[in-house]
Length: 280
Image (cartoon, rainbow, N blue to C red; front, top):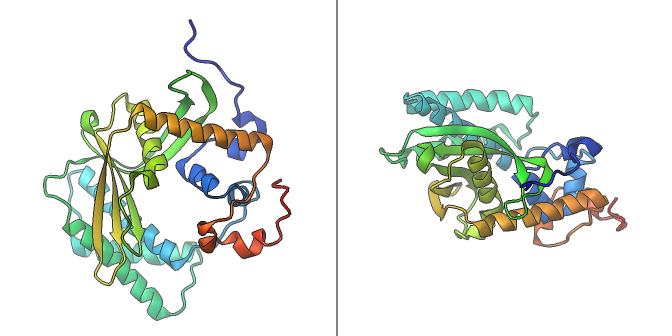
């Protein structure tokens, strides 16, 4: 008896958006299908904000530190500060970043360095050595209940996977301006995607997952929220969202979804005001 139903390879139909599904694509689709279309089909890009740029630099600093730790090396605080300063300058040039003033840029760079320093000061001495850092994971999407091959892979980049593989903990870094409640459902889609990818690529089950938030308050602080290993219920919910996403791509309809998130959307004034409702 066949255990998988082969589907027509979706990625052969239209290119780009059919190459893979990712947690970030799914998240934007759920937030607003029109915003998803503007970004991934129409190719409309928004400039990187200073706050987002700080987040990128913080992630890069943590990646560098953990890559050294993976090799059994400790990157000293002074060396890491210098590395972040160099990375800041090169990345700002590469992304054509603009700041209100030299003073603002200096303050934001200092904030990034302080956030990373605050995080590293709280890393437990007995934290396991990383199994993977900024790991790109890709696996075919085969519905665990029906066995149907959806014909498109899931792809994600896990910030940190702490070993060993038989009891791995998957961690994701966030930077934010304020603390957020530790509601699991807020991060469910991303965490479940990472768990699916880890299981499919290693044959092992994760022991748990974490969101580690670096909070940009006057005195930076770090909050870590742990969540249990995923269950069949989580994967069923993930595949339900994925099917809705693929149905929207098949139909070519990407309606706008007004709500609280519109206040922070770059497309609000430039594209949504005159949208006619066709969604195409």
